[in-house]
Image (cartoon, rainbow, N blue to C red; front, top):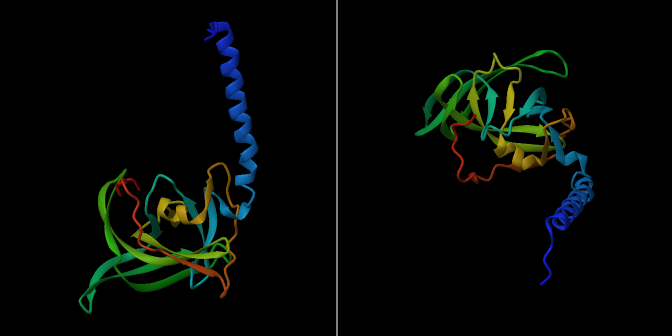
Length: 198
């Protein structure tokens, strides 16, 4: 077997690195060819069925999505836990105030650890339009009045959307009509991930 000197090994290693980098560059555009499956870290979305436009922050550091809600309380309805809350938003498209009182079944509770400490939040299933698809997703309810974005989309939701480009914003406008595809949450869990990272 022929031995290589250090002087020969470095150019060979450098050549392999350049070949690998070239292969990645060649495959990159093919992956991102369909721009509709790439979302920026901030996107416009609509809450369905009302069509109210809100800005959503796509946050890969959170697992479960979060929605701005006020006057949150759980109650018993026919032996099951439900959640009563109020949406108090500004429609980004019209600039008008939007308020809706809702009662939905409690999907589950989560414990969340953040900068302000730990708290427990109710989770409900709600629908949002992203791009041309309506997604029924899990949303923890929290008063987000002090936050810049009323809607935060976590990894559970991002995983259903497509790719996330953290360097760009507003890549897809919501465009859902009555014929829009509805993708329903199928109950899968993300293994090995704790909920307390929102």
